[in-house]
Structure formats: structure tokens, C-alpha cells
Image 1: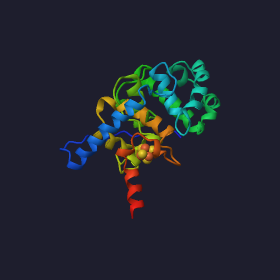
Image 2 (image 1 turned 30 degrees about the horizontal axis):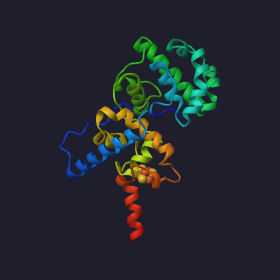
Image 3 (image 1 turned 60 degrees about the vertical axis):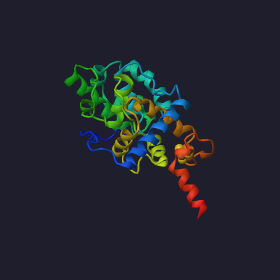
Image 4 (image 1 turned 120 degrees about the horizontal axis):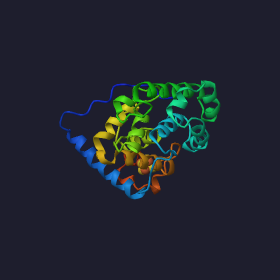
Length: 237
Ligand code: SF4
């Protein structure tokens, strides 16, 4: 399903960090360094050649693998090469092209609505700010951060299922809501690395910190991981 639209960005932390937060920042910094060493070439796994294409691909990737989206988008962009073509399309035609990505009815409506809004308000171009992006149908902070980080050189943390899980296990957040997790990670990961951190953490979640059974025995982050220290504490009891 396309992301629920949210318009208000999380408030930035205005107060001085507590001792606990300082420790978290140190740990976040170290974890970020280790991920950078392990995945130096991590990048967005969706194929795109423009902000429009990445916006469409990211909306399609909700509840769907990036591989599947990459199979669907070449034909989609041949048929709808720009926002005007997509805005003028019949929803049923969009549905047919994206059916295999799941939740295709909602996604088709969101894609057409998004394209219409871009044509009406932004001359058919994708805007480059969070505030503008989250006003578009089907676009929440997660999608906006993907577009900003990969097309506009504006660092952003993308909180998907892998980033949520890894951050929770590491103890970098106690939250389960995407926006709250994003805020927590923004406090402990250096801003310049927010986009790269997201790509690397997604890879780490796929390859090592897997949902069903994390492979802690081979994980480079184990010395900094709360999940591991909790397991040790439980065993010691
Ligand atoms: S040590 Fe285990 S739980 Fe912690 S990040 Fe690595 S794989 Fe995940």
C-alpha cells in the first residue's frame, strides 16, 4: 500500500543531549563507521535516471521487493516517460502495468494523484524539499528521504523494515513508529552520512541481521549491539 501522507516533520532536538544520549551518539558513530567499512559501495537498489523515476519506483516499492520494482519500471517509463503522461493516464492502464508489485489499485491512484499534483503545482518537476514532497499523494517521509538523499544531495534517513529492525536490535531506538525511529537515528548518526547509513543498514539487514534469525556470530556490529548483550545477560542468569 502506498505510504500514508504525513505533513509535519519530526521536531529537531533543541535541548542539550543527556549523558545517555551522548553515549548513544558515540555508539551510533562507531556503528556508522563499521557499516561504512563493510559496505563502501552500498547504494539505492532501485533503478532510476531522474527524480521522477525514483519517486515512482519508491512508491511502487512499498510492500514489494526492489527487484520486482526494477522488473516493472522499464515498461512503465516507456509508456509514461514524464509526469504529464502519467497525470493524463487512465488509472486502469496504470494498474495493469504495476499489478505484480501488489496493492496495485492504491498505488495506481497514488501515482496518478502524485503526477497531477506535480503538473499542477510544480510545472511537472519533482520539488527538492521535504515540506513539498510530503504534500504529494502517496508520499511520506520515507519516500521523500529516498528522493532527497539520492537525487538532491540532501541527507535523509530512510526507515524501512530493515532499518527499523536493525536499529531496534542495536538499541539505537526503543521506538517502533517510523517517524520516531528516524528522529532517534538522526540524533546518533552523523548528518552527512544519513543517506549512506540507510543504504548500508538495509544491506546489513538483508545479509546479516535477518528478520527470522540474526547472524550475530559473524556480525561486525556485535560488540556494540544491545541484542547481543541482552542474550548474554539472559544466559548468565
Ligand atoms: S549483532 Fe546480531 S542482532 Fe546485533 S546487529 Fe548484528 S546480527 Fe543484528
